[in-house]
Image 1 (cartoon, helix red, strand yellow):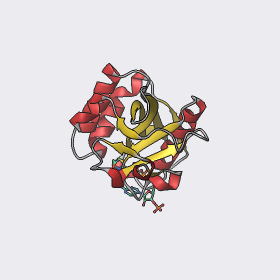
Image 2 (cartoon, helix red, strand yellow):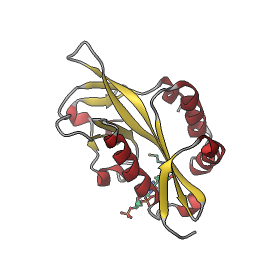
Image 3 (cartoon, rainbow, N blue to C red):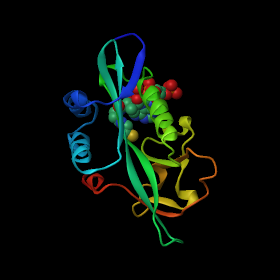
Image 4 (spheres, rainbow, N blue to C red):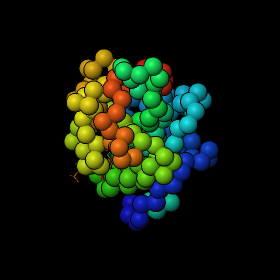
Length: 174
Ligand SMILES: CC(C)(COP(=O)(O)OP(=O)(O)OC[C@H]1O[C@@H](n2cnc3c(N)ncnc32)[C@H](O)[C@@H]1OP(=O)(O)O)[C@@H](O)C(=O)NCCC(=O)NCCS
């Protein structure tokens, strides 16, 4: 498949195609189930799709998270990237890069300050993500510190809150 990669917001009509793509891109149905659950239960998610030659080739979702700040009584709001998936037949051709870049821009334009991601340590630093643990930010009990990253979307947000980053409960099933 060739042609320009076009990234746009997901529409309701995309949902069956996105569900099928998630099932092909990941080894099992967990991520497709997660997205179905977030669509039903979570507020404030942002999802984009990539198209090339008129076909759906990729998907990215951002969902709200809270930082359970150790030194403050109030929890702080942020967002998390994931899942991100590219159609297996067209992986490593720039679709993931286009989705992440467009997604980060969209979140920045919406005024978000921090974005987290739990994912491949070789993939995310190219977008400016850095390890979250040295800043005192952890996913769960810290077991995933080597794969948990943060990116500042609004200057001056880091260093900021420290503590556990809580995803929507739907992520517990992964
Ligand atoms: C990971 C994924 C989203 C990357 O998207 P992509 O369109 O294939 O990748 P891109 O073409 O945009 O980026 C290519 C670059 O990413 C790197 N890359 C691709 N997949 C990677 C992976 N699984 N781990 C580490 N690096 C990866 C490539 O080496 C390449 O880097 P280079 O240009 O320095 O060689 C895609 O491969 C995918 O959907 N994988 C299955 C689902 C998954 O693992 N999702 C991510 C969960 S964190």
